Image 1 (cartoon, rainbow over the protein chains, first blue to last red):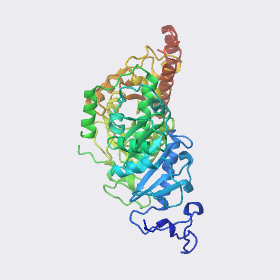
Image 2: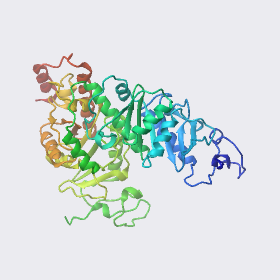
Image 3: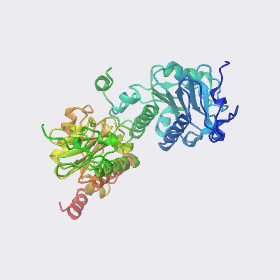
Image 4: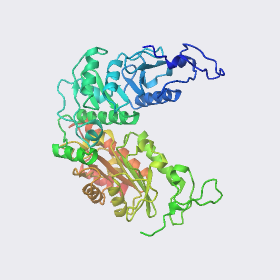
Length: 247
Length: 247
């Protein structure tokens, strides 16, 4: 808990090495140097923001309804509370300590930081968590009766997962929701949150984005076709899993 | 099989005629000269990439789910395996020998190169093949029961085809799928692949793109209207075929 915050020792971009203690580097456009391994740099913020905007451009979420996190070493970039992912700016990106959730740059994180940190702690194989509310997947999340399967095209078992569980409704931002999401994501890469939306994870932005896009495609097929569906047989899913995933 | 690969003799862009053997011209931004007729040039790569991005901008496919090929003489430009057509870059564009499918520039082609080459070999009148997964057409491809016809507006018989067959499901990337698509495209310009997506061909990019866009329009009409449809009569299709296509 006494760890020195790398964000608090800053060299200003044009200041010739002048050190400004406690400066909010996001607001004042400073550059900085971390003394720590896997340090977060300006490039990470830029990449995070570019990806967040890409999520918005793809209509995966609108306004303040989604959130995004990215693990860098022992720290996590995460969209700030109340921020709009599709048009987020640097001053709305929070940095948290992964282990204890401490705020490291003075920006308050999304109220869903509980499940973001939970998933990143449990899943060493993923670095990105995206909570979104795409049109058709959110329609599915708000149904009383779910489709029996989403295995309509090979992209689903290959990228989204051959089953997509639904986490029961818990109040947004609650500890119960954080626990439910963390638990479900131990065994899945893509999940629904009842009366809420979706969460996907990935080893990087591209993988998380692709999972989100193909999950939305599968849900669109389900919604548009109603009962007129022709999903894969179990044998077809097994063949796809074997050939493409080596399962 | 002993044919010299035109990609292996390269004049660097600023190298004053210096020849670099085996250089991956895509990665190092070299220009090159082919000794062969109908040679592939930098301009072809640029045009291919521009068209691929246009396919993405039109929401005809997302992420890694579609692929594209273009015949130049006896060779074929084709999107690389795992590449994302909507944002493809030069280093992800493969070049194949049309006759035997040999890789000519070290980039592995889409796993669907089998049907791309098959269609280009069978159809001397087309140079472009596009496999896509547009929202409404993919919904149709995943139905148990198909609409009786897609002839809702004149664009369908004129550009897409007055019948659009459905190739049965075969595993993506399989030889059976390559054969099924090649066979169906002998007599059609636009087809569905069950539980998968669509394929269109064209004499050039514009024609393939127009077919894809009008196929999506027809499928959107079918999906949005359900049973409340008012398609052309056979006589109306015949009149359109006669007046516009000279059939």
